Amino acid sequence: MAGRLDGIARHAAPKGPMETVDHVTVTVAEGVRGDFRGGLASTKAGHKRQVSLIEAESVAEAFAEAHAALDWSDCRRNLLVSGLRLPRAAGARIAIGGSLVIEVTMECDPCDRMDALKDGLRLALTPDWRGGLLGRVVSDGEIAVGDAVRII
Image (tube, rainbow, N blue to C red):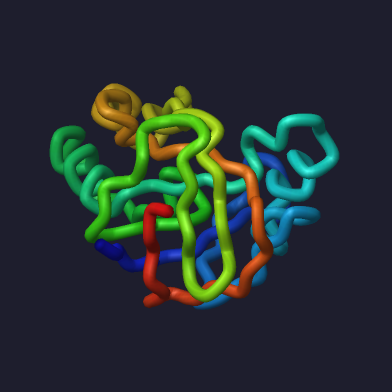
């Protein structure tokens, strides 16, 4: 069963604006190229927050519950996946495109910045990993919107 990569986003500085792109290189050394968090995590032991992923269906449910008219990238995650339930366990691996492999490290808990966007959004993103997951890059890859996403 495969899902689809529906979006790619990054931010060059802490709390900086999110930029959406159609394709990007993702590496062990940098995470999502151009995203400050991936490069920062690469310098730390454990690489727990190198890449973030979120399900399109979870975002839609949370936005509906919070009555939020926002873009998915406002959730500040790097990769938007549709048509596939992402794993909810550390150690699971996700393949995107031809060669990128990401290992799940932990749930990405929504922060108070979500309520700053829309009151109640943090709570709406909290259940069942709706806020997404964090991972570290295991195998480099070039990815593009439309690529297949698989659990391996």
